[in-house]
Length: 233
Ligand SMILES: [Fe+2]
Image (cartoon, rainbow, N blue to C red; front, side, top):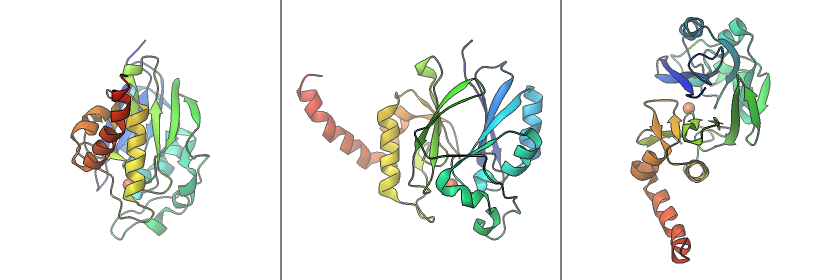
């Protein structure tokens, strides 16, 4: 059975994308990635799909990505995987929420990830990649189905369709984010689907070739590609 099934739900006041992911369209086990808000809507969607939520994955702990973690975890009993460096934010959410948003409930992560882990959850093989720059502990979850052309990145606020994550929040740094994006582009095929934390779905190749924020990265790649080309590879 093939065909990774990814459902997107844009939630909350800053239009964050939460995802329900399962290995194929009739799979009974699923993940929720970045349940940012509207817990009831996400739980209702899981019920409508008749899936059991086996884990909750968090890319980073900005409030718009974690606002519904606690109620979704409580309702499903699913363990929460959170970036190690940012677990303190999830454990004390309201300390970091700007005025006018929330209230959100804190949660003590069941597991922490720092990058380099391989998770096997809901019948999916998931690689955790450290992708800081937008936030200090940010991770990307790479889902590696048996068919490489179907690889998918749940990449939070690293890379968007025609844009990139902001770097002006605490712990943000453009050079670091650019390195993180470059690492993903190097590690995965161009046709890899990117499911970002805001806005529409894209592919690594499309962003590599057209994203205006990656012009400098493109020139670096072009420069470093020359010796290989000269060697006839
Ligand atoms: Fe963010």
